[in-house]
Length: 317
Image (cartoon, rainbow, N blue to C red; front, side):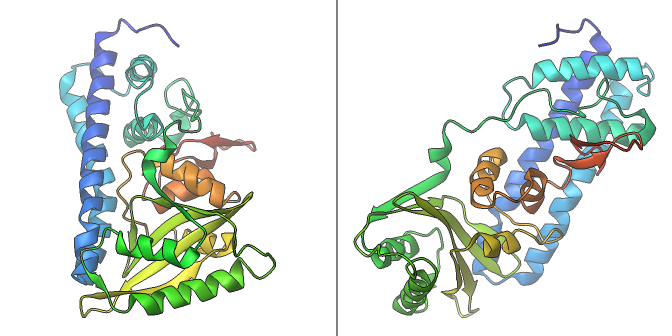
């Protein structure tokens, strides 16, 4: 770890940027918590508006943070030496900080709002992250585990215990459809009728457009399958399962709509990214972050117009 900077201006800048990030992330979380209500009330106009507003939150917080930087010091905030010291101070502040990888991206975006792209280097922004994102130790905290030998009964529990306030239109018909898909996609080449089944279902439901997605992973013996239920509202205040997914490629398609992001209550997005990455190993980290509406996160990017591609944090919104 770098030694603590003695530059008071740099420390104030670092604190201001981190405060801006905290404000942004709180607003981001609050916006996701309203998704369930809009889905259940079939407020599709509200869904579209909320997505637009949530994307604007990031830009607004960057602009606001830059304005604060202009008043916390009389020094020239375009000075690259100050930014080098500010990055050192910021790195200290976010050491072991939850969501440090998103906080680093926020720092980069603030810098890029003030400077031209040709000023970017790892001395003043996070071209490479200051910390490694390791597999989360407490992954269990983000999913609910269901076990048994009767897949239909497991799925019945999943539907009955779902977070929705609305009732199911015809739960037995939904279970028939889920069971048929399970037989076709999972059991077709195996003899697993009496084997123990384990289903890890992500605790938070994913909302996008007019659908809700219940996502998890299915374990039978040593094999792991994606599990996703696409739930729709029939607008008569009843729910039904529209689609069942047990296939990696099909799940990847669900997470491929780059301009239509999910609303999901994920206070620690890297945990969700880690979970989903194991179900979709061909997906890049930034693609999964982007699906959770962190469009500035980890992606391949050219640095200083060089011919070498580095994995970097995005620096502009």
